[in-house]
Image (cartoon, rainbow, N blue to C red; front, side, top):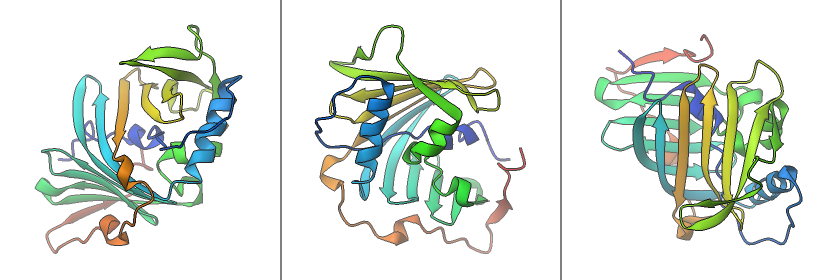
Length: 221
């Protein structure tokens, strides 16, 4: 049986992270911060790192590899579970059970890492200044914070909060799903790997004769 709570569909909508470099854009409003992120996305071809993920009180972690424009791979620690995009298909892989869920990436979902598709994000959510202001303390540093409010009642989340360093690194995203579940995602980049060569083979799933493949389960929900 597939444990959908481990890798809920909502995770693909809030992977909003983007390595960036020092820039001189002065922040006047939430859109200024969004512009910084969007500019850096265009300059990042590859990166690797580690992620921490909390959904409905359960914590997970693992490693991540990204290659522009639409390939990524997330390996969950200890559970034999992966999420992988080869640019054409999105795979949810449960290695211990030899189960694979295959999703077609149409043009509207060409990059399931939604934060790397700013136009798609802004279509459903409006960036706003939080009550405490744009600058807040996060761990041991002062960072930017943006609140994304849904533009309509069809949005997948009630609210999204994004934390980014003053240099533009997005550090953490917190969200509340339409069902009221809390979700958090943060990432630590291996800075030395940014824009280093990454083989396409890292994102290819090779099934065997015992693999049970289920297609488009997420789009059927």
